[in-house]
Image 1: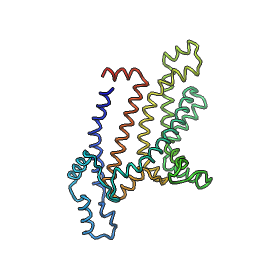
Image 2: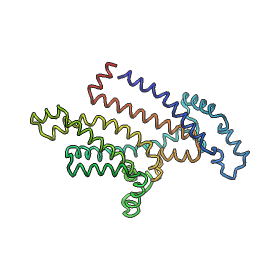
Image 3: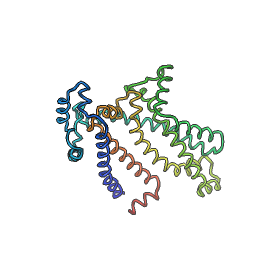
Image 4: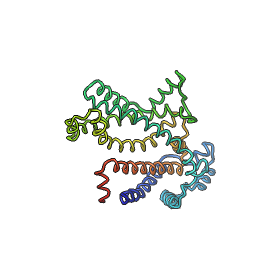
Length: 310
């Protein structure tokens, strides 16, 4: 298991280098430059050129890329072009808000998707199954930003039950968390239904029923444990997606998380800040997946034995 974790951590190095290269390339290919954005349209060409030199943006792409990587090895993610503050400091300040939002959203997703998926599988071809499948299709097809705007219109502006923006209290997270959770709930519902249907047809489940065990025990003790293995993996991946997917939702609900930080940095062509955020999210996503794999191994003894042999 230790060797497996070491391999996963080593693979992380080329992955992060590729992410830096891609982000640098995209930011270089987009029109404009940071000095022009920061100084405005009325700035003189001399002032723009001077600020670009101070920021180091006038240097060739590969030199900036290599310089950034060397600094990163030394633990320096650079300074934001727009604020002049440490990129890492900006990320650490905003990241807890995004983690709260993503955690709340994945909790809501699990509470909606897994029970409905189990119910749809146990009651296959019944009204519950049809309604669950239809609900999954509806939730998957609904754009998140549209649902967020409709939720603001109904629950914040029309009914006045919930706040429409900010992140001061946990109540402020309800609407954005449900908005983020809707498509993930649909994914978990469909996956749980599929894996449960495959599991309840296995021989050991038939054997448990033949021995006269109660249907509730057969479903929750024998079938559900194995059916949830792929669901746990997908839930972990979805949590990582929620961290990145929060970019749009944080903008819609004016939440000062890392997603809004990225959007603001892209608008200002703040290359160090955008690169730092992308790297941080990629690193966190990889760590989440590593934890999911370890959890997977502890749930399934066959996988744990394979790791121990390796």
